[in-house]
Amino acid sequence: MREYSSPIRIHTPQQSNITDLLLRHANSAANPALFAKPGPDSTWQDVTASQFTADAKAIAKGFIANGINPGERIALMAKTRYEWSLVDFAIWFAGCVTVPIYETSSPSQVAWIVADSEVKAVVLESATHEGVVRRAAHQEQLDSLDHIWQIEGGLEQLAEDGKKIDDDQLEARRSAVTLKDIATIIYTSGTTGRPKGCELTHGNFVELAENAAAELPQAVYPGASTIMFLPLAHVFARFISVINVSAGCRTGHTPDVKNLLGDLQSFKPNFILAVPRVFEKVYNSAMLKAEDGGKDKIFHAGVDVAVAYSKAQQSGKIPLTLTLKHKLFDVLLFKKLREAMGGNIRHAVSGGGPLGERLGHFFNGIGVTVLEGYGLTETTAPITVNTLERIKIGTVGKPLPGNAVRIADDGEILAKGLCVMRGYHNRPELQDEAFTDGWFRTGDIGELDEDGFLKITGRKKEIIVTAGGKNVIPALLEDQIRADALVSQCVVIGEGRPFIAALVTLDPEALPGWLERHQLDKNTPLEELTTHPKVLETIEKVIAKANTSVSKAESIRSFRVVPTDFTEETGHLTPSLKIKRAVVLKDYDQLIEEIYSAPKPKE
Image (cartoon, rainbow, N blue to C red; front, side, top):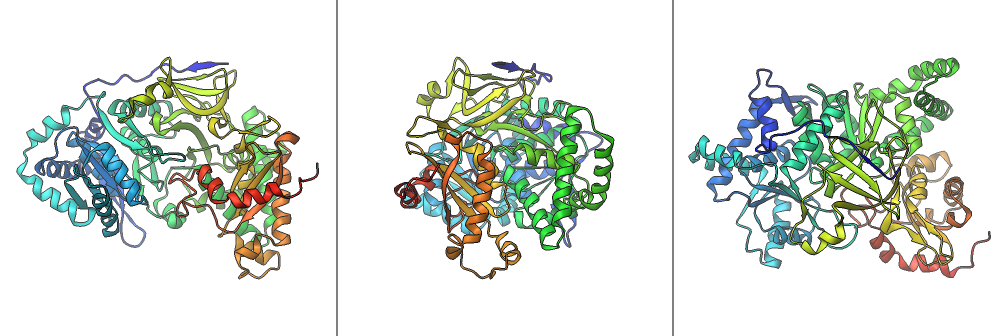
């Protein structure tokens, strides 16, 4: 199949905007709790729709009182927290446009975004963030920037300033915004080149959220709850925030993934959203805990049962013996894993990269169905998603209502519909490059099956062409290698080279337990471990297993273990945990040259 489209299900009045989704609940008799703030001793304090609306309106009046005009840009730079969403809605109530900035951004990155989008004010989290913004303003002479407010103290000041603005003035500003108007300019996190500002409209968010909620009634529904830990500056988390308000779900926030398990157990969400690396970490930490406790045989047997059960379930026929095994392991293992995630989770949404079929079947088999979806910043997050009624593990689902997917002659995925952005801010010259006959070029390679389910096979710009002319999709190998507990990151290389190789980093969290199980000193320096025979033997086995999924010409023939992990802090990952391939290749060019100057590996 070359093209598949899903008809729109929900039609939204053109004279509405994102704030109407909130007001629908705030003005209802039910007045549900749409948010929850962390309280003392691992408790959570609910915030009703009307409370949240009143606070957002008060801040919005403060923006108006400080001279920020309709359509002007306000930047938001903070970790994932309740106030992020509160300020976001306040900006929309004031008829303005939100420009998210990752809280880890450097002064030069901040300067680029503020200047390019002509930001008038910034709301930020801390004195550290304010220092970054002020350095950026000083270095680049950001004339458009008039105000900087810190969340602590600044929001109270805005609410105080706004007391002089009456309700009618605020309502005039809010209601003047329609679906066609820009809601936000989100800058791509930039695996290559300068970030591009994607202009996403109120229509992108409202129409997509309403249709997605209608398509996912058993996962996103009134009274359901989730805890947000992904960066709200990223389009994935941002869209989920809007769909939660649309559907009447309750959202909590946690800024630190290190506290995630504790927060899951206290908040007890019904569903979570995460990028594949988070699911890999959950699986690997459970496996390591089992191995450390001498229960590795039970764990691995349970994994096999979970995967087999899920595959049988998808085929529509589960043998009785497998059902009995599944019930046994549900008591021994699966229930404990669900309880570690809070006990109530039955669904999860995964995006931002391919999850991998085995992990998808594992989580489905233990009773946590991962609904894998696909999208980009330019498509307001989801173009396609699996639903509980229509799921094929190993795919990213069918187009959501109002969206369409086409596969170009070269295999590139093209998208059209409610999700697609208006265009790149200040970059009209990119229009022809980004669109063809009204279809957005995603830059990803994929295929549609006979039922319209999309499968992602790689990134067009990341396809490696070896010296022998063989096309290699690195993600097919990288995902399998990274799934091993000892491995943190993997980058497959070989462009214009005689064979395929890989750079591998070790997982610092998994290392102590791994070293102990292999009778090695836990304090062994990382530099020494990169060439340690037992480490190399383990990585070699992982790579050999991954190589069985590709042809000989595509297989990894050599590798090096890198002494430093690839992280956002080192500049090798984007905030959404994608590899900045070009940066890795540049920073490790000497190591790469060493691989290819050594004698060619034997066949």
